[in-house]
Amino acid sequence: MEIVSLIIRLLIAVMFVVAGVNKFADLQATRQSIRGFGLPDWTAPSFAILLPFSELSVALLLVPASTVLWGAIGAIALLLIFIVAIGINLILGRRPDCNCFGQLHSKPIGWPMIVRNGILASAAGLVFWEGRKTPSQSVMGWVASLSNGQRFEALFGTAAFVVIALEGWLIFHLLRQNGRLLLRMDALEMKVGGVAALPALPPSGLAIGSPAPAFELPLLSGNSTVTLETLRAPGRPIALIFSDPDCGPCSALLPDIARWQQQHGAELTFALISRGSQKANRAKIGDHQLKYVLLQKDREVAESYKANGTPAAVLIGIDGKIASAVSMGSMAIAGLVATGVGTLAAAARPANGKFGKNAGPSNTPIELKVGDAAPPFKLPDLSGKLLDLSALKGQETLVLFWNPSCGFCSRMLPDLKRWEEHRPADGAPHLLVV
Image (cartoon, rainbow, N blue to C red; front, side):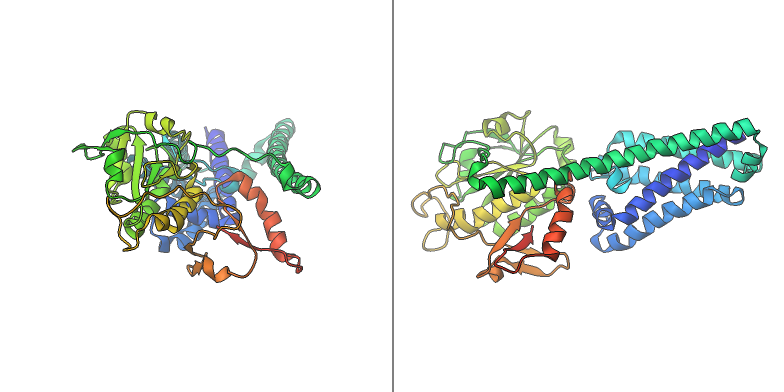
């Protein structure tokens, strides 16, 4: 049993080393993950250092025989904290990325993670129990007790494990390199054949200018139903946002929707259309004061608007017609709202600046064309300083919509950094990453 305990504690130590090193290697993603778990923003920088430091400390304590008990206690404590944090977020309907092993492995949390951490905590408990009963076996002492044949077998097994791990690491980076090569091939094709030679993707959703499909859905409160005509009654354009209680990015978008409603509610009517039970959606919405949260039975309304995923959004003009293509993802939806506030709502606003049933003639759906004014926006940069797009007027700017949790975006990062460092001085555009 001593040998089993030794192997278990070494495996747990290796796991914590990999987790801690990779969290340190990508502190930005670690901070983002901490915020995703619901902790205040001001705690993220400190916890982003404290968490991987704790993991590495536990790993070091598990190796020497003299500190095994403390290492086991630390491992149990960390794993129980992880279980509680994951459980609370799942109960509240949130599914942030775990960022468990940094860039090596990160996916939305789920109940299997609680089971996995429970098994690891039980294994650490076994190490602690065995360490209390009998003195723990040291690594060097165990090696010294082996025969020459057993040492060879142990060395061969360790070497095989290292080779397999290295192969996995090489395959991972080979795939990332392949992504960068594909990006360079795309750039070469554009240089050789021109942009016009590349096929344009058709816009998703219903045709702009077509009538918006009618619907009648119950409010999340269950007190009444809301129709498309109800939403149109104030005479404002409508932003329909399709969501799902099990969608992590949808949950992350909720604070933005609440903020947009507060800032632009006089210009746009925001309606969130979700699916699932009232209980699941109430847990998800939480304290966000959203006026219209409507529940479809499955995806019948989303399918009628050809919104084939979540989160997705579409604009409806005050004439009840489709005014935009379907935008997929948080960044695209933010751009859609900016378009709705900056152009669609402005075009629909009457001379007196007020919306209403008798505000004036219905608006014509707006499509941005080459030469049109860029939709205005103000967004904070990484230091918190507010950037107004109008400040860039007069200089050619390339706006890139980017997501740190997007694998393809991450593969672009080295090329973007090289472009910033070696940007040609002969009229090359400035890069603005949103």
